[in-house]
Every structure is written in structure tokens, then in C-alpha cells.
Length: 196
Image 1 (tube, rainbow, N blue to C red):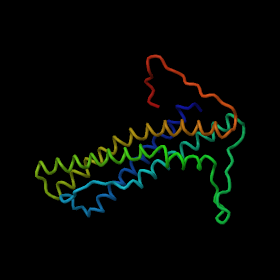
Image 2 (cartoon, rainbow, N blue to C red):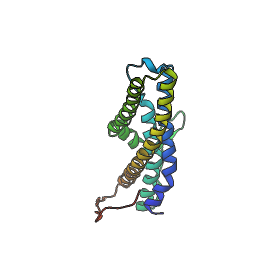
Image 3 (cartoon, rainbow, N blue to C red):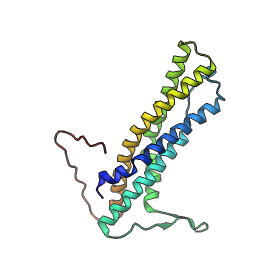
Image 4 (cartoon, helix red, strand yellow):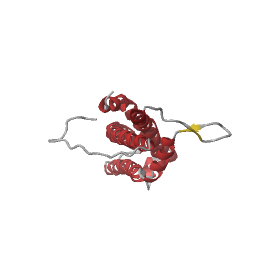
């Protein structure tokens, strides 16, 4: 299967994953404030859900692309390694790489996703205050607008991270072979209309 089709096969899952995490993040924030939206001074969303979202996407998509690239180059299956002798849990070499990558390289993206969501909530709170909305009306404005925002945003994040995680997985799968490989960039004249 070509790269575009493989990516497309993960698109719906990735969009649902992002949307679910954005909703979890908002709901945790809303519940923390006990729905008392008129007295909110700061909007700080918990970064945990965003980090879990990236971990899920890069682990599932990136790992599949890493395994396929590894197999394409070596003819062998990427082996699992024993991680915990007591529980007998296994972890792939790729998972170790991905955990480090998320902790270091993706920190900026994780913060950016949170900051964007926080700014949307702040803007809605300012709008509600200007319009003189009460508690219930403000809560309704927040929920409906944040849900709509999250649907649109989840598509953008999903497409970006689907491409990023599949590329990263393929690159790491190639590196795990131990082969001396050269990366080659291919330019496209006039751009591309492909969505993935």
C-alpha cells in the first residue's frame, strides 16, 4: 500500500483521537471551575491530555510506519524487547525512541495546542462579558463554541500530526535497521493538491 493510502487509513482514527482529547481537556477545565464561568480569572488547560494525545498518535501511527519501513529495508519484523522482567511487559525499540521524542521535540507543539485552546476560551469569556451574558448563557456559549472550534481544530491537528508521525516513524524505522542510508528530498513543481 502506498504512503498516501496508509495515511488515509489512519485519518478518521487520528481525527477522533484529537477531538476526544480536546473535549477531555475542556471538560476537565470546566469541571475544575465547577461551571462557575463568570468568576474565572485564568484559563490554564491541563497539558496531560495533550501529551497523551501525541503519545497515542505517534505510538500507533509512527510505530506502524516504522515497522513497515524496517521490514521493507531488511525483510525482517521489528523485534520487541523485554522491558520489565517482573511484569514481562514488552516495548519496542521504537517506543523508547518515541517517548524521548515526545519529551523533547514535541514539547513546543504540545504547548502550542494548549495555548490556542486557552486563547479561544479567553476570547469567548471576553465576548460573554461584553454581551452581559449570565452564568448559564456564558456556559452555553463556551460549550457550543468550543465544541465547534474543537471539530475544526481536530481536523487540522490530525492532518499535521498524521503526516509528521508517519514521516518520523518511517525515518526511525530506517535508522533502526543499522543500514547506512541517505535521506533524499524530492521537490514537487507547482505544489501539490494532495491532502495527505
